[in-house]
Amino acid sequence: MKTSLMAHLVAGYPTYEISLETARGLVAGGASFLEIQFPFSDPSADGPAIQAACTQALAAGFKVEDGWRLVAKVRGEFPMVPVFVMSYASIVVTKGVEAFVAQAKAGGVTGLIIPDLAPGADEGLAEAGKKHGVSIVPVIVPSVPASRLEKLLADEPEWVYTAIRAGITGVHTTLTPELKAFLSALNARTKVMAGFGIDSAQQVRDLATSAHTIVCGSALVRVVAAAFELGGITAVRPAVENKVLELLSPI
Image 1 (cartoon, rainbow, N blue to C red):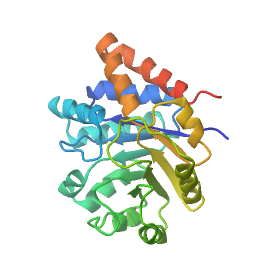
Image 2: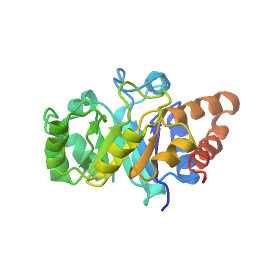
Image 3: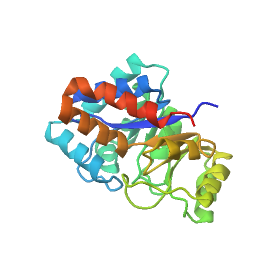
């Protein structure tokens, strides 16, 4: 079975044009899904690399409509690659929850990942997702209480994003047999995205049979930053393509 990778990029980082080149490189490298993050000024779950990228994109003038423009361009170029939009509650609520979800549907978005709009306190996000046919992806950690997990799964989400450790993104995560067992059991009940601290091919191989797709974010953002600094816009696309190829390299 082909190993599935969800590749994360920050819309507008370092510029709109470069984020589009990033998306092209990620797909060329073999990413099965794209997670496009709309930058926010106070990202609670993101580590230093993604925080810095969001800050730079916002300083360069990123607006939410630029994110939708990027989504439309990516969907037009790569109609077979599902796109998930990741952001935070403030952006969704400012637009209006249902209006945001409706815009996602109109843009061809498969799902929304909004970590701080949790099930049970989501301002109507799950209901709007069902109404418009957009998957709302709850975010959990392996230490989630069993009762809460069962309540969440009772709503039959199509996807669950499992942050494979607590804290923020960007720090290498050590995989344990217990973690893989948790993911495998959950993946038997719904489609699991597993991420946080994924930066090596060995991690991707180790999780390949325990999750539907493995998410890589901060490591790719760091590649974008280094490539742009050293070689400008033309260096970004091949750099991220090579990183995805490396992550998906066979044993």
